[in-house]
Image (cartoon, helix red, strand yellow):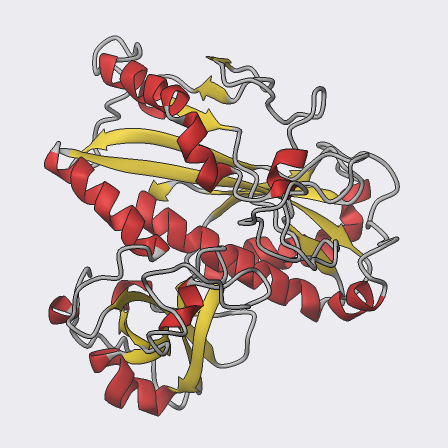
Length: 383
């Protein structure tokens, strides 16, 4: 739901204080993190599910370490850092299988006059989907996520200054079955508990790096896919912590190892989601719409890299012969290109291989030649 006036209370039968005692009310920040509050089930049912809650507006104007940054019109010290109105989207309410008696729901951020907060990531996506809808189209997307698994806990990694972490495999394990069994206690939980949360996992496998894994989420409507992607990454870290492991989605953890990519699969469909408009209904061949969409990705790749590669670390991933693209070209079923065209007919889609949302200890929105703000500590964070 896009505004507060449209929001109505929706309480499913399973959401009772006898079954659920904690509800996490959260939103996505600019770094793809879940931020929000925990509350009792009773308070959520009586109040927040209907009227929403409030969260400080500085949360969209911070660096990765949560330090407020200057220069924003949205929120500042001069304006006093007020509140956003967090309006619950009841369609996102779900049980959190990896936490006892817990549910989670996502919010849309609004100003106090009930207008949406335009820079909020979920609102940015909503605007683009609204433009597509006017053209009689919708977008289907699917996420492929790569991450490293370490035998160190998050606290141990912090205490070691994130150096000499021990990966859970001793050699490259791309598509191996035996060696990744070391991680199966973790990976099985990710697949099964995400499925219980309504986040369908197509499968997981070993990746090219030592201790590196890949997990693919089944495609869905673009907004639903974004929500699932966000919830998966947050839940994966929580499950890893429970297993006394740590994982990192950072784009380039080690210059001698493969980077972590986020391969984004996209296709455009008619409004009823019955026909893939990238493929001709009769011949199955790529359509003019497909060619224009692919050409647009290439044309505006420079600007889109604010999203695909938002940090200095993101760019460190782009190295030759590392499975990361180094040129913005496309080809059919070619893993060396920035845009890989795969499938045919109803499954025809574009796999964008450029995204790698690595993060460093501080924001890279700086004015220094090193690409990082003055006074940085130079440490990579498992975020």
